[in-house]
Length: 181
Image 1: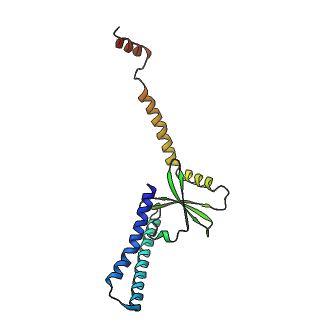
Image 2: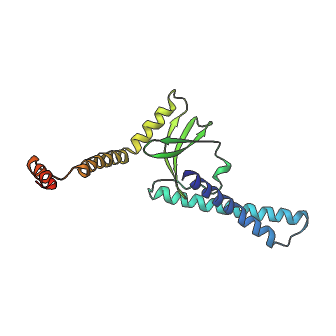
Image 3: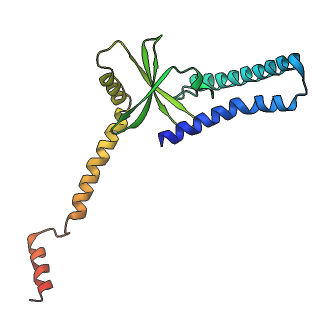
């Protein structure tokens, strides 16, 4: 599922960055070097406006105290190193490694929303342990709910395996009636 989400996100980014410049270059009748410079300038202006719109949407989400970030549709151009990590109860998370900041940022990728979970320093000796601790802290209520659901499922399984008799006498009487005695 994570690969599908990432593929959809990348395809949307390519479409968003490739469609308008292609339409602009096909619809213009400019010719020569000056025409090419004008087309490139128009494409640059359109991409700058698009980046500004994504920036404004991201700011509105941040100021509205909504969780998560919307990356610009061309995020894949400037994220240096990516890695995925798997939590046994929470699923897949994306790690973005920034050498210049000496940090690893942890994200949960959705179809259109990429939620920032937290960050871990690269200078630590136990980076995987810190990432697991961070995820356990951030998702403690979800983990407790999943543990409670597992315990409840075990109790329900016990009840479903129970034969339904409340005492030994009725169980014995049923067996005797089944034998026809």
